[in-house]
Image 1: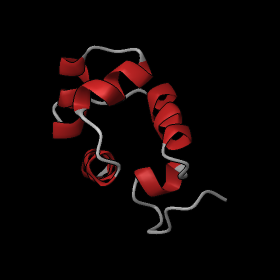
Image 2: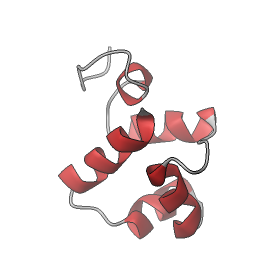
Image 3: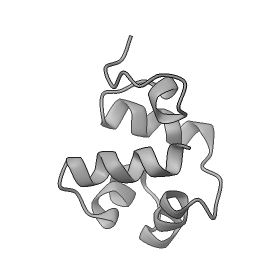
Image 4: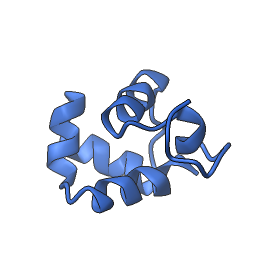
Length: 70
């Protein structure tokens, strides 16, 4: 599911939850819940994350294992 992928991408990029939350314009606690899967992430934030990490929505939601965007 996307929550594991966004956590892995954040760690791979040596970023804190606060840094990613700031990039998205949300509170760290809200972002933490997205990563833990206890809160559903809105599509507009998934799009921002895909752009931020230069990957595709399909990768984030598990439809492909290729990180690179189309």
